[in-house]
Length: 326
Image 1 (cartoon, rainbow, N blue to C red):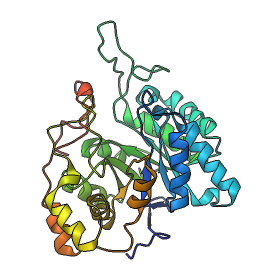
Image 2 (cartoon, rainbow, N blue to C red; image 1 turned 135 degrees about the horizontal axis):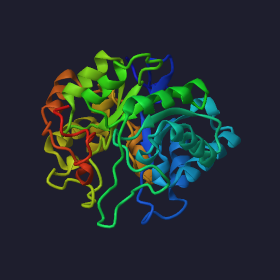
Image 3 (cartoon, rainbow, N blue to C red; image 1 turned 90 degrees about the vertical axis):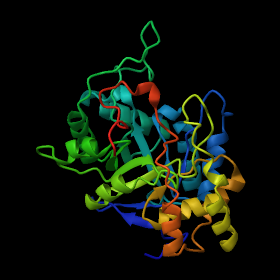
């Protein structure tokens, strides 16, 4: 598959397609200046990005939607050129809350549909508008999770035309099988968004998803921010890796570009988050070189099987996905 800056989409199992290179928009709403996400998405579209990954729980979908709509109004892109992924949050798992949650995202974006809507995590929390419900002792309030019932409501959203495709995120093999083996399944998940980078290459889950025609979307493809409140800091910074540095020198590329190219060349979509205009541009410049088979194997050999994003604060949830091997 020859990938170019203009053409780097892969087919999904429902007949739609997804660009392999995307931009992530997660940012801590408490510390991110207003308007920064909006400006960054506009820059990204100008630089050639067509896949934009967002979520209701990022509290900035209004900025993402404004950026997309302005670029459409300018004539830079058409709506069908853009691939937007939104996410169903943990407090909206009950079937009757799924469509209203997606409609809320659409209203916030001021768009008629999203291209992909995914179940963000397989763990249901106490339903309602408090995104992180806690009891008086500060413990998270979980909710009985019925992934199959939630999935049926997701299918109904696709059938209603509110989303073109439906997928999942942070699901392990057992949780994917729950959906795939469901009686009366109408639509398979087209994708599974999981942590994936040279220090956590996910070989087993990747192979399983390939067999089932589920595209893997890799989040934190450059490692992640060093925010100790939710990041495992025992894992060394990925972008200082000697092998990535040396391969980068050969191609005159940054370690970030090598790490992104590694996943894209394996057919894994990547959604690096950046609100820095230089880095946004740089991250996209991975289509003018390709890694050799030996280089891909060497980078796969960096796998330390260490997650940056462990979500340990929820590891007592019955559906916490990371207790299983994969």
